[in-house]
Image (cartoon, rainbow, N blue to C red; front, side, top):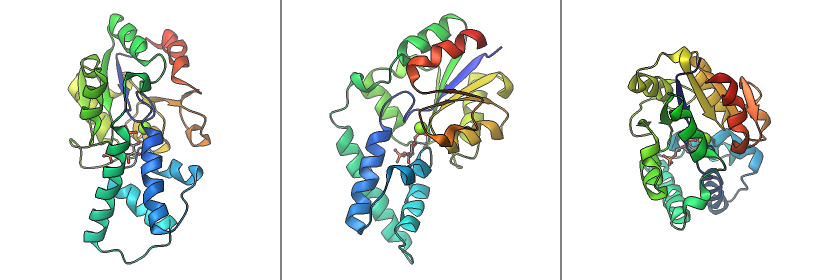
Length: 215
Ligand code: B16
Ligand code: MG
């Protein structure tokens, strides 16, 4: 039986994945190339600086100094935060609040496991910080997904062994991170990149069907 559930943030709890894409795309436009939705899949769940490295590679931009990289990453984050400024509770993904409440009623402990440095701010803004027993985000970890550190830290904070934790993810890097520490993973979304997940749903609204048999 599953005793702990670790939710990714962007693309699972809240619909911010579209803003990450829009902000990277704006940066790519300025750098003079097009960032497609397919290529954007590679950025999901990946840290800001590693995402930038992938972007620069896609655009064929070489010999970028550390200082320029820092400025470009800052710029993308500025665009991203600007795009978030109108975000409200309507962007919490379908069924998530109800699902977390029902899992808690059944004795399951809940953590957030996100690569984002803005995770705490986003949860506060949406008024759902209190739903999580523990929060681990991009400020707490050294190694980004697909390294399992974010989920390992979350499980340790919850006090639950890895094999009794379920991860919910929308990104290939996240599914790999969960598997790297022996956790099961539900992939959410239509992407082919999620084929490695142990369970798969198209939308967060369907998650409760899977948990019925697991918790
Ligand atoms: P930030 P998650 C990830 O969040 C996003 O999927 C990824 O696109 C982003 O680059 C990363 O957070 C870092 O975010 O720039 O806000 O620190 O999906 O792990 O919740
Ligand atoms: Mg995600």
